[in-house]
Image 1: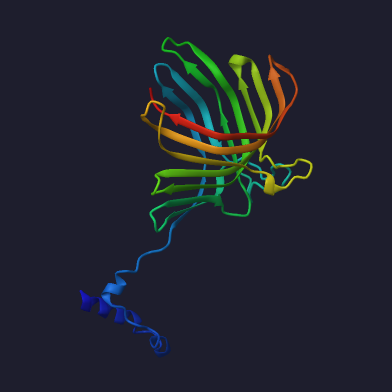
Image 2: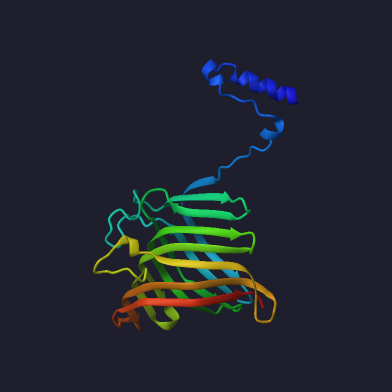
Length: 269
């Protein structure tokens, strides 16, 4: 095999000019064995997701109908023309995912726009309903409509700690939904970064940052659980119209909302 490798290499370089041949140094087999690929994987993505119904069943059931995830079919957001990307369509697009496995074994996944824009999205659904075994039901939420932009996202899985860190930056320009069992409706909910100033708007301050740590954590009784920690979350939230009993009661604005030191332990019972 050693002779065959050298023969193939010689044939491959036989056509090179003499000047180029002068700088070529033959590698021994043990040196060639240490050469490995160094490139990660990049994925350019565009997609649209539709589900007729999502059903979670315990003794009764929770159903979510008519789920759709895609593009917002516009590029202007928060008064910034073109923020939503170069194309106006119903696809979740302008997405590039870079995947690397680092030297220490950590997985690094970076999600970002392909172009110098944000990723526009629209999420809609029909009724969210609780169903009993006898057919009784309660409508929790209906007519969900969300449009916004995603600035970036990343996933880091640490092999030393077995912790996955999930980071994202997003902004919601409009969110509408109804809560039928409480006779409440929300129109024009928006969510931005806490530093976003509507008087002096800057796209650099637009996005709210989410930072989650996900791992196998201990719950109160000592058993294992899905642990989700969120050290901090800050945002401004506005609601253009709050409807109670089919009548508008006005607007709501929450300035500098701060949620800190949040820990969740999720497990079956």
